[in-house]
Image (cartoon, helix red, strand yellow):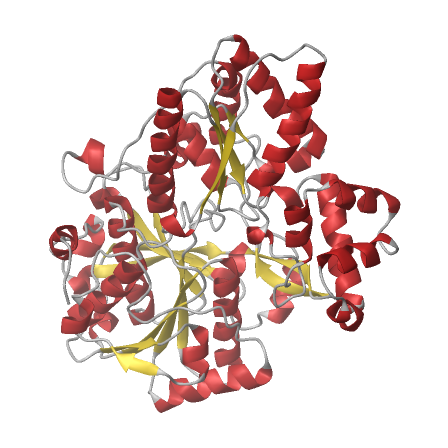
Length: 555
């Protein structure tokens, strides 16, 4: 197989480990903290997780640990969407297992959790894994979005574990995947099985974090990749001086990606979904905000700019949220009737008699292609596929209409030409940054230590991430500690609570202090490509979000 020069050199990169994990394997011991509680709903969760609730925090310290050299057989699963660094989690886990005992085995389940229930596995060897070290993607074993949730699926997972004589399973995924990990750990114990389950925090959206999980892996690489592209577009805008670029970014529930990219590139406008919801910004209010910047910049002869939009913002705008909820309900209840309708115009006419007056009026006012996207194929839960709604085109259309009115009124004399972009898949499989390469390798190695020490129901944890890697603190966080109860599919279910952008947090406050200036004055920053070789201050720096959070907390 032909490889690029960068890939060849990345194969040779040696990820850095915290000092406590880099020494003798038998000298990695565990320090246990006090028993923990979930973030809320303690009584219900204690009842659901009788065997795994209330476990202590774990920190790795120097000390004797004879267990760590026992022979182990472990399975690993990549779950959910891709995130840069997943291969290094598996590499860290593999190297830890072999360092503990050369006879230990690692199996990779193909295609995600479904590969576990269907017993589709391959043994990961040294020669095999060497082709994937420090590279992006999940193509080593593939991923999937199957949820292990039915009694039959849980039983099938246990049967696979028995057939392969597994001691443990490592699930690499986001909040839903690691909720699954917690349920699986509880199930195995309830069935008298000693198979352990350990999770690793993955999601480029950055919404799986707390004081013990400072970052989810892949976020660092993704936002640096997007910021390079945004910086390139901003420089082009400042060169041509004739286009407004509306850029939609990944982030359905949380706006961490948009906020970090704004801090890195200083666009004219950046919408934050959490602020839109908290302040009840209407669609018209958002359009007015953008138009205000366009008008003021036109007065300075600057008919160009950059607008960043989180992909999920439409679900946070009150009237759009109401419309989407009505569409989801109406189409679900009348699925058979809806399926018989000939085309979009028939669908729109049929909906006119069912939607509430306010939602119908909004639906009719939307550009045709946007209205169509709201009623196209639903996701497996029957909900609109928000990632397919081209919010950037919706806002461009509405801004154009508003500016046309302002021009007729004589209050706007500029020119407005807009281009829309969506940056999504570009960031999910990039070569991991040095930070993500090191962080992921440490997460995988830490998962091995947790397994070798006999723990289950934990999420691999690495803290002090703004310091050099040899000063990081590794350990584990009980999965139940991060959970609450939420309504899903009509009933209350245990889930790991998503971490949204905190409007009182240092990253958002830093953005707020500067955004009025950025809106009018061209202040673009051009981050350039991710750097893999050079001084640490160029190559190993974490995100601005992480640095601001640490600074605010005095860490």
